[in-house]
Length: 519
Image (tube, rainbow, N blue to C red; front, side, top):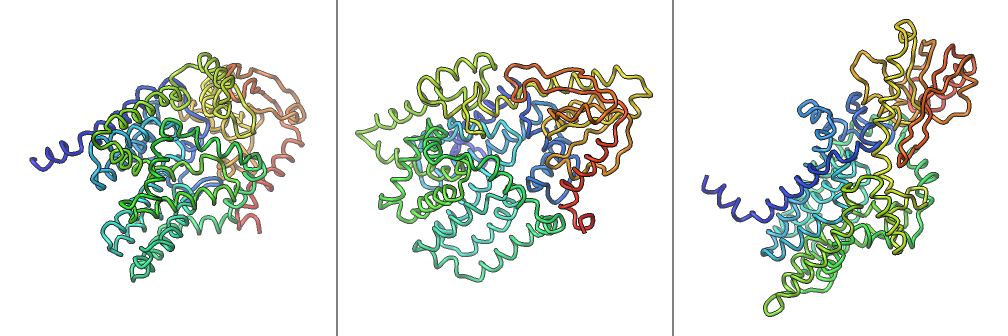
């Protein structure tokens, strides 16, 4: 008991920040609904597999366990990424303590990570990215221990870290490659060439093997997905915007990560850990060359925050203590300024007005979507409203149908956002499943379903050709909804054209990713 009390006392600052991180997310958890991707990952958690069309399987498995324990309410779902984000923050504090950082180093480093928009918003969203941040940081922790202890056996910790990191998000390979390159060019390269390296590689391969086999059995959908991203999103990446976004996404923490970078590169005391600066630079160059999205680099900054706290503590030694207070004041003032983009503390109407001011001040990049255009709300915020309205309208209409019509009614969503949200808002399991030919939904859609009526949600201009009778029963009217005006159709008596297009969609979206059915 005394050891526990001593540990709590020693880590009191780290623990207070960790608790604060968790509370700030829980207190804002119900201001908006779930983001569209969260509905998809909840759907995946009900159809567990070793892979999905666009994502690895870890999030689905963890979400399944989490919802079995806590349920799938809005607050319960938001709890999962908040816990992961709080864990990452604790590790930042732990690293600072291992580097003998005092209270100023802890407060500066932890405040920078706590208030950075790039770390705040992912901890709000049920997405693989928050797990990606954690596993990038854990990989850095392993390398940190490898260098600090000079023990090659520390490499073995990379087996679960990189293995599970791959199962969380494939982009772990970017940071793993950068860390490897940084180690190779550093004086610590000798730590790599030991009997533990092949065991590490073999162990990591064993963990990811089920996913690789799944990819093989489904004709490598990850390659198809990356190709689609290149065509639809990554092609919009502009280098100037990418560079400016690197400053804006960590806006409050800019003095800290820049201080950490300079400290690692030039300070004699940081020579042993210089490889973390190199790993950051290698990651940045790699993402630029691959035309990746600006936020692919977010987790590469975390170690810079750690050493930034150490740097500013050393640079503010007596009689220059005021420097630490100045840096902290900059973090806090910029953090409050950027907070509405980090957490949904403003409701949509208020956020629209705040966004207009940002555009006037030349900070419109914070409102830029994947299409390269500036919109009224941040993309994630516009994706967190309207889905409940869709679910309510669809199932309210379904309830108005007679029992005989209900029995022959199929519910279809044109894209995964509408399909998964309708499924989430089903009143109970007696209501019909929702189908779609988009993303992971292609993995469990039937080839030849039998139905006489359909609730069709989507923009297709072919709806009237698909049924003998078609009725527009409603639209999603939320003014800030990303899919504002999304129509809800009810069709009766499907035509041969619908069944022909269904088979064509199945051949295009399902058959190519199933070796047995594709042969």
